[in-house]
Image (cartoon, rainbow, N blue to C red):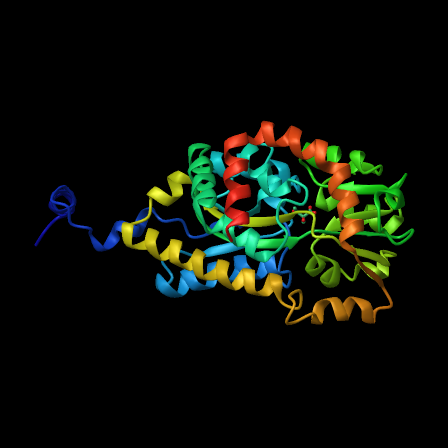
Length: 341
Ligand code: X2X
């Protein structure tokens, strides 16, 4: 009979020889915490849930993930999510490029006004060399990126009047997200932007502390923003925020190579699903989500080329300034990838 000592010695010998003993997953946590801003049934939350489901299924339950929406692991401050992920306060996240921009300046690329005219342009960036470069940068900043999904093209809504040109924005108090480029853009357009977290934005919309906001229409419909007085929607597609699935490096390295690959492939599959639900009803072939919004009696403005050009002109200075800040080479590469899409 082996006693405890010899058993431990045998285990150590096996490990030295490169065997992976059956107990290797003893160092796995009981639960991995995945941070998001919004939960299911927003596409973002659905993508995170799918990632957890696929991973649990394919690892036979070795990796159990739980989604923590509302960025509750960082007390609702979405601009601190990336730092918490890097430090290991959060194990994993499906995060918006906007929210990680304070730490990863290059992710402001997707917030350059009117850079991406359509979904194909967005795909040309995330699925091409620009996306690879951004993933290298994310990794150098301290997290392992695995896949892309998306929140979506961000449309502007407000409770006061239809917005067709920058003149319509004069004096409108608009809630904006936590990267300074948004303050710059909306100031340039003549609005009165005020930066606040998503947690604070919802009561601010309800009480009328702000006149409007900008977010994908999937966020608008799930929240029923028309009931909060947001009865003017302008489809201008000025920016879109992709989502990145990422893992804390220590957590990632604690997994066996096999499980690392399962986690990555599950993120890629969940990302594809996330993109599908984020675009549902918002494409040329299927406008059902826009129709739903119109069905609420909401005034949905689609800009003419001339009207749109007025916004492009108004924000051109911000574009040029931020092109330099982000890195002119990267932005030029993005512009070319979009042209060749
Ligand atoms: O705060 C927002 O507007 C949201 C939910 O879209 C993001 O987290 C970027």
